[in-house]
Length: 556
Image: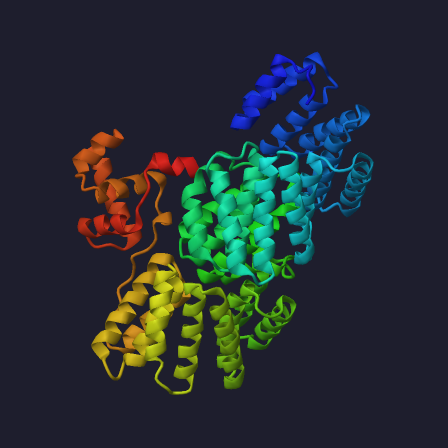
């Protein structure tokens, strides 16, 4: 470390470490006012501007920092910045030529300098961009040893996280997820100092949980780590994390939260510099719209991104919803061949493929799909995967006029444990159809429960099907309740206060509004949510844990 560091520079670095971006920017700019070519100040300002989502300026200052470090003979520092620039040119700008050029420059500098602390960081960065998981595992494990040798704990934890992602991607899921858990414990426990490194660990965990359908783990860690994303919501780093988290929230039925996270991700990518990074959020938003039955919106969001790997199930779902099962099957079969055996990313694809094959009357194809799912359930030990396998088994039994009830009951148990409301609702609805003749009272209860789940989620196609089943059972389903995201911020606050048992007069005092205005808000809530009285409003608020306006503002 250089010894001639100014007071402004030291204060700016302290501000950067605690995430005070504006103070850091002012400090680095002051340091550069004294010494315009100080590489540490140039690098610090570039890093700060990255967090402030000013990517063009960030690149400009980090390029200058690279040149100054190289000029001073600090080749490790220069090599690290060159590798970072390669990553940004590729991810944000889709500029392959610039990315390759900077990656080559980094490699040449490392040849000159030999083993160094920065080499460990560069190996991790290389691994993050790699597609060969054997190479990723080798590089990250080498990075762990280098990071230990050069006393770089931040790099060691990031390498540990990505080695876990590599192991899970190679089929060693339990071992890989255990490493990710360890890395997240270090990241959230205060061991790490570099905020960018913390972000990489967070993104590795979310990527793994989404990819390997371990939604319970993602939810548990996000309860611990949400403060990180809340603090850095405008940066490209948290934009990538938010897109992934939005996918997890969609899968687990927290659709209002998913919409918020995906919109914030798109907001982080709204400037022209990194439009190429919007695709992750766009394809996940399309998946949410498909589940909501908003097919035209889903298709528009996917336009131009149909080949994106995360778009497969949404694209196939759109084909299926529009009565094009052949196209849906072609898309799904192609992706399954790409994934290869024993890959948990296949679970949602197989779930949809089972529906396609059954719709085509291809019972042998459906059984083959179930065999694949059963293997994945045995490998993963995850409640969600076992639940999906049992649900598909029940659907096949139902299609072949055999008793699906035992399999549905097992599926429902696993899906409820995995906190998968949409799929558990599907299991309940199929139970209702299966029990309609033998136990109509239980069938009615299951169909009503399924309808309530679908309505609360906002899953319009599923709700329509449940209402149809109820009509066949001789019941007239009532409309609603609808979902809270239809309410304004003030109406959500009133809803929360009704849930706490406050009267209109008490609500008026707390919100500094008239009693008549409070009454008006309660009436509007009743209308928008399709509820009958104040007691139902209170029950709705309790069920959905409506946050306070102050809590909401942290995320919005």
